[in-house]
Length: 323
Image (cartoon, rainbow, N blue to C red; front, side, top):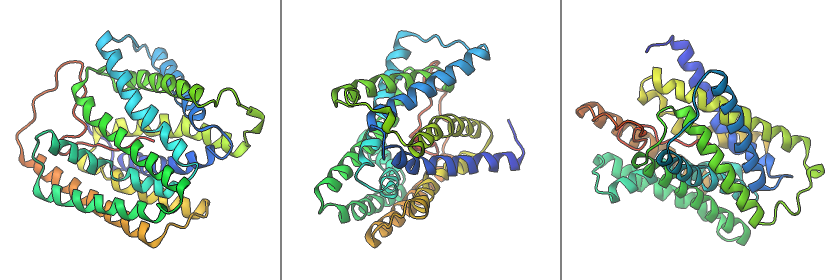
């Protein structure tokens, strides 16, 4: 399938800006809204809207038990922990720092692939070591403050959960239609986050009258633009654009997030954090280029079994972040 270049670049710009802006959106949401509750409602509403769209289009939402189990695990690792915990972490850390940490997800997946017995290219391995060193530079300035250190630890944990979910998803049986899979994954994520919100006491102290218009607007933006528009643009790009072009969002999104945090929230990352971010972005760039070159030189991969999702962590494939 081909598409006009202007359409491809328009969709890519959407992915660049939308997914880069979600960290800013989350930071504004948690100013007055409970973190786990707001994340749960975000995914619940997004799942309902997407399900309504698919039903109107005549798409069946029925899944098998193995597919339900697979989407539930993905919803737990990627959305409940991988995204929900970001809401908690951004109560005490800057959105730009959160984005810098999430920027290491492609590198974390390469580590997981190596531990699983795969052999990424040497350039990929070296760039991964450099990028993880950049992660240390990002978090080091905040370790002296207890609340900030806790936020940083939660953020690193959230990024590892996202990496783990991305890595194991290739071994799970998931619906073939990615939109149907997303409905069930977001529904599962909302359910797990609701349990978390209840356990944390958020529901017992809920005070909707205290939610600011600014936070509500940011929450609506995350639902409609972050979760629906961004994913739709990304899914379309995967069908019509070269993967080497699509995965450029992996090193553009953190830059967008840093710029928005500085311009709109007055965030001022330390020189060490900015140096670490530059190292992370450069490392991801080198890793993506090396993986893409290796994929071009390899024989075609076998077709994935019916009902499974193509490996998002394989050479030349995206392992990006949907916030």
